[in-house]
Length: 193
Ligand SMILES: [Zn+2]
Image (cartoon, rainbow, N blue to C red; front, side, top):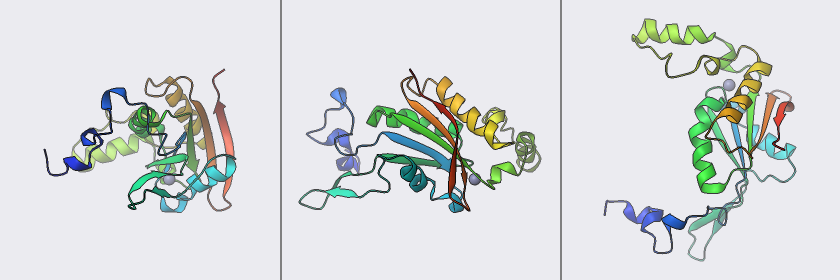
């Protein structure tokens, strides 16, 4: 036993790792939102929850008699990264599919995003010039910068659709968020038949 093993699910007597069927009994998560971590755009998950009628965000903890956090009422999980890019979110989508059976994945890019301030080659050249490192194999070209929002949102929804980390039945949506007005505009929707 390691120091924190008592806090792992695999050491709990009730937990059956080999016959795991999801944590939805504890948290009814069905939707993931991928958005930028720009603090000015931090209200994107709330905006999406207001746009879709049956989403709960932020929700609240569910406690047992002893006050332990055994669940939550949230239905929508948010993943934030630079630009709100699908490329960086694939590990989260695959993990959440295992744990929660994801039904919807929503990509949201926002106005005046820092990723609109450079070209894909400038990111690579900066690292080459300043840090003597080649990051070009690490980040695919179309996920390095946002050259226009329609293309970046469509690209990211297509990247999700083509990725083996995203189950084929998952519904995909792409939005542009104008953060000053709070207006969400749907750019692309990909609902499997
Ligand atoms: Zn941004």
